[in-house]
Image (cartoon, rainbow, N blue to C red; front, side, top):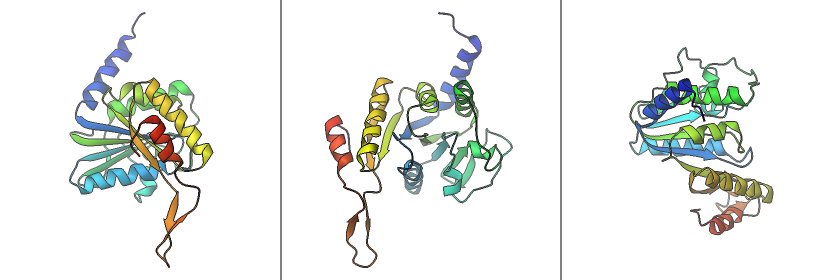
Length: 222
């Protein structure tokens, strides 16, 4: 099989860029609307408060919401190489910095893979303790492109909600991760309940425990 020299050289540059990052964690989900981006932001911000150098790569090309969650809606950058500083220890990069607001991204698979590789190659994170990658829902081109290029030492966290449909889709995401040799660190069950502001008791919005059962079956951390 003939290897494309240009692609091989790009892969080498990506590997060199990623080698400066100690830990790479992708946050994924089987379906949308489960709070994956919220989990990514909270994880990254929490690590930065502990003194770690952290970057967030918003790899959800069709719904890049990470800048909005940090109050950076409408911010535009001129160079992909420069991530946006949130705090001294936390920087972010997103496709939304380079496309018009409210403009849909209508790309086919090869275009998505090219965009992913350009971000992995071009963003100059420098020395990081953690890179958190917020993936789009499902197991499409972006997820595969990240997994194949971010490095074999990367890990995954799967976010789900307690409903049966979400659990089923998350099971597919876990099986996908195992298929491509992406180590799953654990599962987060989101939106299972809230604390009542009056009585301070936990109120279950949906039947909880689905993710915990799935974690036990898959021998994963919950």
